[in-house]
Length: 276
Image (cartoon, rainbow, N blue to C red):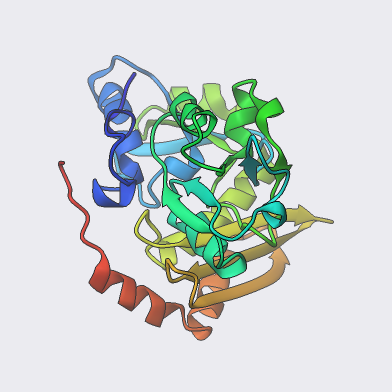
């Protein structure tokens, strides 16, 4: 199925209604009975699902990090001042501006083939994509470097696939249960709690990344101004038994670092065009 998010390729997601555009048509298929499940990249699933729907499984996570793709450079550190980096993400853009203020960051939309074609045509010196998407589509050879989380903290849910069904379909939930990966699910739940608490969306440069380490969750997150001039960052470790509580704690820590002020400023600048 083709979604609105797939069809509108000439404008940033933040200007056309956000990531929910990638799932609405699939949810309509669930409602009308033409589909029993919908499979999504978890980074495209809104933080609040409508009551009619439930996430019934989250599968094992692929590499959740961002990747540098370039025909010229092996790393961001190799790129000279003024080199052009393409990205579709305010999250990536803010971190690039903060760490590499001398690089030019330009919006990049389109499906994966379109983005790679634009790079190969020389419209960009490098582009940043999710490593998971490239790997899953057999394009892992295009990756020049996987960016460590310290350089580019991933999006909430990046690299994980979620299965959605109607909340009333207990039979479907039971069928899908064996596909759920408990470790990935706990980490993604912690990340989503951070974003939900801070109203994370395409209009907010926000990242959260949870890793399971020796039975506990190591959770990192940030909120930034799009130009990277202000960043609130926090990290903590906690029990995996209540990942949502851990996410809420990290969100509170981010607020203590000034996240609310950044979010308030972003709210005055954000003018999404719904239904465009």
